[in-house]
Amino acid sequence: MLEALTRLNATLNSLVWGWPMILLLVGTGMLLTILTGAVQFRRLGFALREVLGRIMWRSGGRGEVRPFQAVATALASTVGVGNIAGVATAIFLGGPGAVFWLWISGLFGMATKYAEIVVALHYREPDASGTMRGGAMYVLKKGLGLPWLGSVFALLTALAAFGIGNMVQANSVADALKTTLHVPTWMTGIGLVVLTALVILGGIRSIARVTQWLVPFMAVFYVLGALVVLALHLEQLPRAFGLIFEGAFSGTAAVGGFAGSTLMMALRYGIARGLFSNEAGLGSAPMVHATADTDHPVRQGMYGVFEVFVDTLVICTATALVILVTETWSSGATGAALSARAFETGLPGTFGDMVVTGGLLLFAFSTLLGWSYYGETGIVYLLGAKAAMPYRLAWLAFVYLGATGSLHMVWDIADTLNGLMAIPNLIGLLASIPLLLRLQREFFARQGLRQ
Image (cartoon, rainbow, N blue to C red; front, side, top):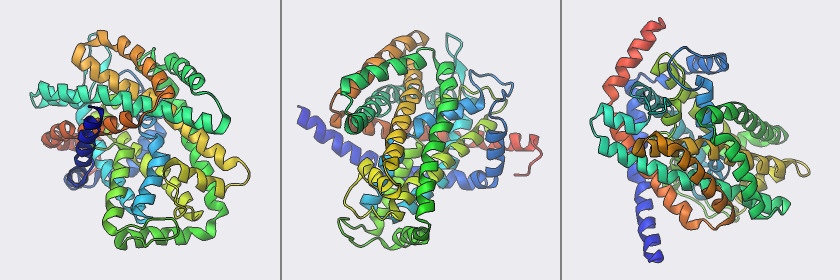
């Protein structure tokens, strides 16, 4: 029975994360880029001013948390193990050229994430407890009159969260601490349960208060470590970029322990890992952005542009360049082990191991916090506000199970469910394009900016 389920999930996963889904997600990003007048490029400066200039401001709208707290919580969920292990896997399977296609997925993903957030904020509503809720399920129910499809999305979110945002992250932390400091997994499990409980039991306001400080710290910590490596290997930087651009259009021949890749492998794995990392089109981040205290959906949408920019073009690029300048990409290692080897090679003493281990712990813990709210939003849509606290308690139990168990099957199924979220989300998003464009015209006209 278990073997049959494994085979079925493997087949489904190959479809969910195969070429059809990749083309659908990237195609949606390209379409939105055209229809919005390349808003992610033309208004990037505006987005950066909004985020960095309003970090501690409230905007006077309806919502639970400040706009920056919302984007910090979304980044907490988005910036995870994939930024360390996922990028390394893309390079291992697709060669250095995969990095170029990862950038492409990020550039178009900015438009998708922007559009998701704008539409989600327009259709958000308070639940029975007064907490503002939003996301694809509300878009499908209120905008398209398809509450059943909203329920499908909510169920996928609630279930996928336990795997991709919970057990997998807890397991990564437990494994890292066991490998580096010989901490027993049961001890890590208890510690994670306590730390997570202190944050998530207080709801979205408590999560946001923590992530607004945790996310900037962990991003700066990791990127600073990468910048030190790049500074020490400055002469290798032009060659690294050369490998990226050459491999993007010609593939990469076998080198040492590296299996080699074709152009199509570079394209597929680069885009797929980029989409998996920034989650643009999957419908996850709009659920927390919908809680923002903002005066207009488009203003918060600008925070989505910033979110993908930081996740893919800053943090993923930092990992990729460290792997390439240290020339460890052809070592035969993959995943987190490849990233760890790159930082250990690039930094003196034990500093490299500290950066990767510290980054992995912080990224995984922040994902535990952010995804708890995504899953909670899904279950509240299905069962009502009364289900929020039981879901939080169940979340804590699964944190311990994740830290102490073996997760190959859990990871595979959660990966599939996470990808399936894109289908109902994109249906709601594409059907809402006229609304998106109207809101965009309205907002920028109010700002005195031309379309």
